[in-house]
Length: 216
Length: 397
Figure 1 (cartoon, chains in turn yellow, green):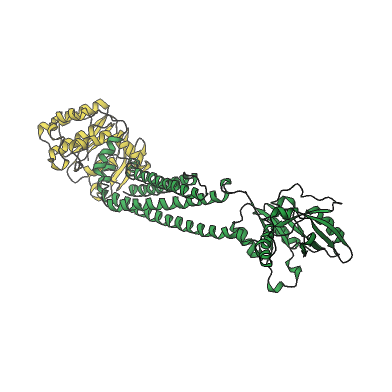
Figure 2: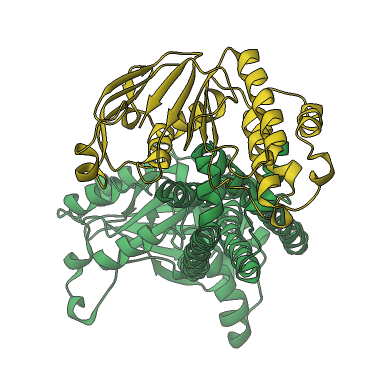
């Protein structure tokens, strides 16, 4: 799956962004399938906004976000849902778990959303073990700490098939050790699918072997 | 889909306003029952009317004449059907067969033989043979026969036996005796007078007149008839359904009249039809309100889980999946309601069939095909309205 940006500009940030140079805003950018992309940006320059544009849950921009050569707007709601089930994973900065579901159910939701599950249910335990969250799998989403929620959100994104994984500050609530474990798991899962990712963060980091760096 | 729907069940709470939903379901059940009863009552009624089991004859015969009003008295021409009127009666859809009642254009006097001292002025009429309810081998006349077969109305003999003879101290007479009586018939016009033998061959319940074979009538009218041929003032029609309201209306509109007893059923039928229509109408109204409440309930469920549904869609749940899930929460209940109503109607029908059978009225003991079609139509309508509502509100999220 190919993702292309054509002169993408967020309408609310237009004036501010015109005064500085950016590798992404108002440029023509093509993300090469399978590549590990890091986008570094200071706060307030539109990291989350960009991820939301790429995932098509915010639409207040000029220019185009093209998926497989077509702008998002050309797809129907059902087609978009299919892309989100099969081709495009996401880890939100605000995590977005269902509080009324247990951690395991939150993960399962994305595993069983498509008619044919990508991974068997045991895979959830395997990943949870790698991220040290086995003991909280049966707890309700409401009672989890931010760090635990973040790891559940990561596993939730990894139990579905994808060609691109979008990550918005995915390790913001994790300590160094857990970050390493999570990054290793994400890298393994991407390689297993020949998939790429787009990660936004505040600073430089060595969590992955990035193929491309952009400054927002 | 199963495990996914199990998770959706925990996220989308359909429990809000459950009492309202159940009340609407009861409403739907009553509505469905009323509609089905109306349909089944209609089916039963037509079965009673038209099914061969319930009728000795498949058709009925009506003798039609114009109503004699005070204004018409003394002007016999006004009671005669014009050729246009006859053509108009013939072309009515409820007229299966049509015959003219031909009157005699000569004078008839009948005398009983021997010392019975019975003599009366009379008239003859003739109808095509196919309209007669008396079958007798003697019912024929060819030119030269001195004996004329005659059919009397049954009522005539009854009037004599139970009215006249008792008051006059005369003997009552059986049908057989009447048939055996050799009557002297004298037929005359102002010029000639001839004697014939009359022979009663049968008694008619259908036509209240003194009937002779059509062949004799046309011969005698030719021989003894006065110069001016009188027209037809009575016609006989065969109709499959004398209670047909269209027939009654036709007669009323044209000022015709017939044996009212045969039309009596028409009034009953109209009353039953009205009641059935009213029941069906209330069923439809109730159905409409049930649909309204269902739609509002669906709207309420979706609105109360708006945030959850939004997150589900963001995570990649297709609107199609949500629609299917939501419909799955409601549709089984509708199907159960449909089956329950069907069972109830089947039970009622079984009971009604048993009750009616006691009175020699036969209806099927199972609900008819229209009932099944009715159920499918109502369920189809409910499904479509639900689908449209779910689609509308899911897509709006």
